[in-house]
Image 1: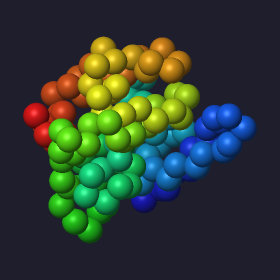
Image 2: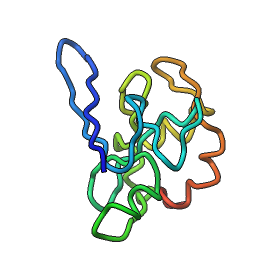
Image 3: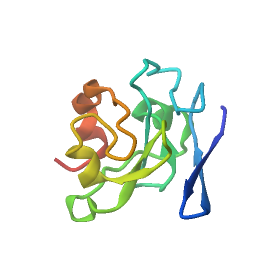
Length: 120
C-alpha cells in the first residue's frame, strides 16, 4: 500500500491530505482506475479517510464503507487530484465532471458508482 501526501496552497496555508489505498501517482489515480480523468479521491464517511475508489477502500480498510447521508452533502469530501482543492459532495455532484476550481476533467463514468459513496 502506498500512502500519498498531497499539498495544496490556500491563503498561504498548506493543506496536507493523506490519500490511502493503492495510489499510483500524485493526482491520486489508483491501480483500479487510472485514466487521464481518474483524478478524484473520496473522503469516506465511515472513517473520514480519502481513498481513490471504493475498491481501494474495500481492499485496504479494516471496516465496511458507509455512504454520506444527504443531510451532510455540504461537507468537503472530494479531493481534486489536479489542484488538490476539496469539494463538498453537493459541489461534486453538480460539477458536470469538471473541477470548479481548476477546470480539470473528471471521469464521467464515476457517476455509475455514486450510490457506493453517497445516499441517493
